Image (cartoon, rainbow, N blue to C red; front, side, top):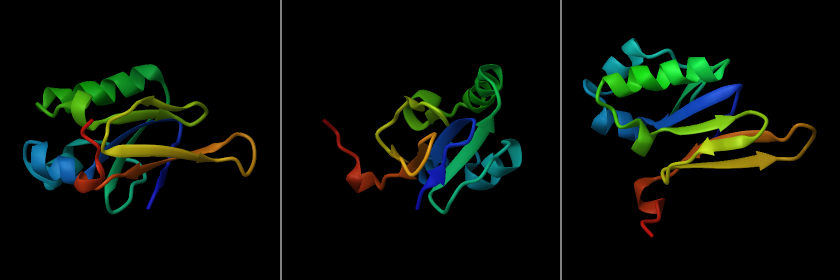
Length: 112
């Protein structure tokens, strides 16, 4: 499945939250403001760069490695920061293009 990029979006795989977030998924869901996601991917939405920075700061303060596990994207321009475990693509059915994020399974991640 894919999750559409809305406004400024931060994406992280549920598997990475379960493994690396202090307290796991239940704690993450109770502490973080989340937008639309799917069975493999969480999404946090921000309306501005400042809001996005605050979201990433809150994640980082828990000890979660945002540099390693969080991908960022803008609904107009697509990926801002990529990580191997999350891919982005777009559809040109109209204007503007519709960007989407997809969680990549661990065995799909290239370690080049």
